[in-house]
Image: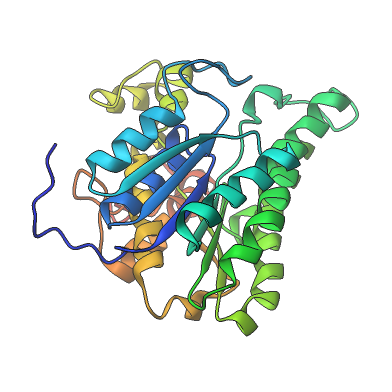
Length: 311
């Protein structure tokens, strides 16, 4: 789709790295940052010539970069395993050579679902798979920040977005199993830690979570539906009615990145639904789902599924 010439470009001239941009939330964040005018380096492990352990060959970083460019930004695909320190060093060196700056770092690295032993106690869980979950969901973020932050702090106004699943309040509950709980709590703590270290450079760190995300895998693997008929998934779980597209959290991150006063959120764990109230954007259908409030007040409370007042 061709963008209108008068589409606002609040991020024109800005450079973003979306680490983990192959699909889902990461892809949408990259595209929405591009729509706002940013140059976006989209990284991940699945390319048109190589499929990662996630096993989804049709979603590639090249595809993401093309969508970024089509949206009005400049998309640059760089195959990167973010557990490979030399690969990440080379990635940030390339950004430095080509752009001389980095304004936005989004750590959306994951890919651990295939290793999670759902329903297993800690001692029953395969240890190597559990440690792989932590490497993919925690170590990868740390490696990326270690190499990217020296470039980001060169200029004031830099933004780091750690991405997780669940708000800080919701994640006070045990997000079983053990390794998943650790992997999804860690980004909140990483954002808080960086929020203590970045302000002297004029930079900000936050953590962002989507709600119940209608990712490609959620749609076709778990619910056996498409985006066009996604409501059919409510027959399996009526609470799926509160779900949201990846675009919603993409818009949330783009709004944060374009906010000159984003430092007011430094160290906070934010949600797509909460940020929609702050900035006034909606999901693609014009609704504004507040999934985590719904999941707490309706699903967790054992009430019948009813999204009235929640989207």
